[in-house]
Image (cartoon, rainbow, N blue to C red; front, side, top):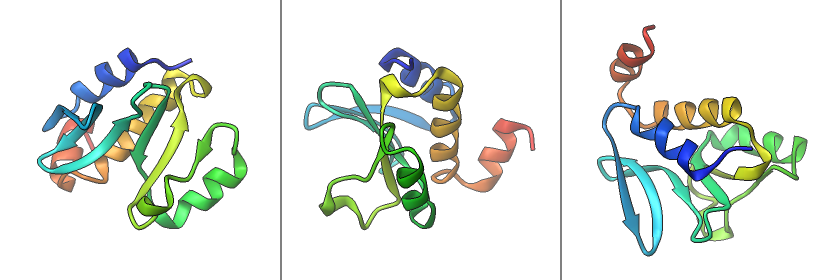
Length: 113
């Protein structure tokens, strides 16, 4: 079971990441681009995810992943229930979301690729 502390630890280890509180919600961003956002109750994590893959993810595992609010469907975004993912899955989700938002050379330099 992943926790908010796990999210913070993983996100803070990634270059250019800043943590901010916006409208009583913790968000992680690169510049002005938000790639992770915790719900106010910190049970749900929203994260950057390719639009063309999100329906398959949500359909395959609807108890763990869900679409964002209708007003946010225009963004590359999916949400998950933190308690439903383990630390390894969380690491993959956070790093992949981060990679969508940083320059490729930054991601390659950090990930050693």
